[in-house]
Structures are given as C-alpha cells and as structure tokens.
Image (cartoon, rainbow, N blue to C red; front, side, top):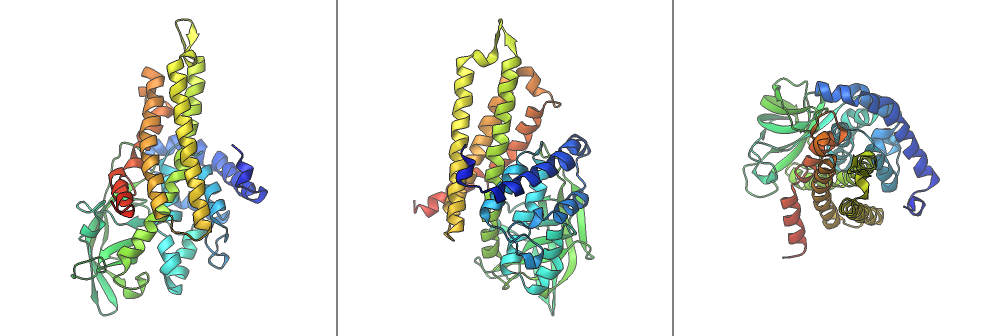
Length: 383
C-alpha cells in the first residue's frame, strides 16, 4: 500500500488519534444508535471538537488545527472504520457540508457565532438545500427569503436534511430574488431556535439508520440579513463550490469502508465449507474479489491525485465528480456482491454486511446522483 509515500509520521499521529476515538467512543455504541434510529450528536461532536477533529483544515484562529488536505484525507479514511454509514455522514455534514461556505465566504460575525462553535462541537450544523421538487436540480428550489428591512422572512420547506432533528443551525439555500438565472439565491445561516422553524417529521430510511434525517418547514421565520453568507444573490455559486467539499468527503470513506467489507467477506468465505471445501477456493469468487480490490485501488489513487491538485490550488471539480461517480458505482457493486457471497446469512439484518449494503446505496444518490455526475463531467468535457 506504500502509505508512507503520501503520509508522514505527523499524519499518522492524527490517524491513530481518530482511530482510537472511534474504537472507544463510537463503534461500541453503533448497534444501539442504529436500533434507536438516532445518535447523540451533541455528545459525540463535543468530544470530537475537544480533540480538534471537527476543524482539521480550519484555521487555528477559529479553533481548528490549520492542517492540509492530506491530514483531512487521513481523517476521512479513518471515518471509514466506523461500523455504519450514518455516523460518518453526520460528521461529514458538520465538517464538509454545512461549514465550508461560512469559512470561505462568511463574515467575521458568522465565523464567531456559528463556525467557531461548530468546530468546537458546541453547535450541530446541517445543510438545507434539497426540496421535494428540487434535489439534483438545485435551481428549481422554491424556499423564499424575502428581505424586509434588516431581516429575511423565510417561507418554504426542505427535505432529506441530515442532522435535521438535532441541528442548532442550518446553512440554508433560499431564493432571494424573482429574477431568472443563478444569481437569485443566497446562502443564509439559520438558527433553529428561531420562531417559525418546524421539524415536520423525522424520516424513516432504508439505511443510514443511526443518522437522523428530517423534513423541515419554515413559516414566516425571521433571520437577520447579516446571517447571509457572502454577497446576496451568490448563494447558488457558493453552494456549487461547497458541493465539492461534500463530494470529496465521499471518496476516502468509500474505498476504506468497501475494502473492509471485502476483507470481512474473505474471512467468511474461508470459514464457510461447501462440498468439503472452503468457498474461498472457488476461482470465480476469488477473481471477483480481486477485481473489486483493483477497482478500489484505482479510486484511492484518483483520490490521492485530487489531493495533490488541491494542494497545488488547482480546480479538481471534474476529478472529484469522476471520483463520486466511481464511488457510487463501486458501492452498489461491491456491497451487493459481498452480500451475495454471504448467501442467506447476508440477508439477515444482524449481519454487518446487510447494514453495509443498505448504507452504501446512498453513495450513488446523495450529494449529486450518479446521473448528475455524468452530466457534470460531460459538460466539462464539452460534449
């Protein structure tokens, strides 16, 4: 694997600290949180914030660690060791989805009021973009933030919002102008204690069971204009940039967790005796497993190439989209194939491969469906 080509001893120190935290503070409780359909994010995030894990790349002035993309990659790879998909997704919302735009474009007020406490683990964040009729087609969203004096009056709804029932603030994309085009939307930081904010319902999902996902409603909710991130009307552009952080988050998580599933399957096949021989002796199964490992190595190396591009301050949007597309394809293929090798046992909810199969299905849907990624890449290739 030659990890030392990319990661120093300092990177590995961060990696070991994250792994130790996951071993002690997360994995022993995953089954309970999955059963409950929710995890105690305030408790988890506070512990992570105290250790600096929620601000790997954010500046030390904001309470972060001020480290580079290689440190972030080491952190994200270790999150792949969590024995479910819901908890890593909740963490990713905090670090890579709800806060990057505040860091890059937000005022000092927004950074002090929301970003610093999020990095410290004192506030739980959520990203509120998706609507019932505006998922991949972000420009079709209907939630409106009408300016009245020094306030926005927000009306509308959002759905499929991760961390939605526990969030202290939302990074909300809303329409602030009736004009056509992409310059009619703004990103606004919305405290959830504001009057007019309603959690319509907690959604019941096929997978990611330990992650609370909600449908939200806004009824004449008033938020100060100073809560707008950057320039009014530029929120769509900011969110497209923020999506790159979200999609990158998916990549290390995918190849690490999928490799763990393959290793788990190999161990099962070594122990499962059919017609007097371990199933691992079946050439067709070995070849299939090897093919998947080879493809995962390709995804990992594409991810490392993206990190090199990011370190060189190059635009990696196309490569990230390619990685997200590949991660979605492999997530479906590998977890489905591994479950098949487990046979009837794999169909039982108590088996970890069953959970992995259900959780992995979201990779090709959330944060930009595979079809959307294909369209994005096609446009960049001027097709």
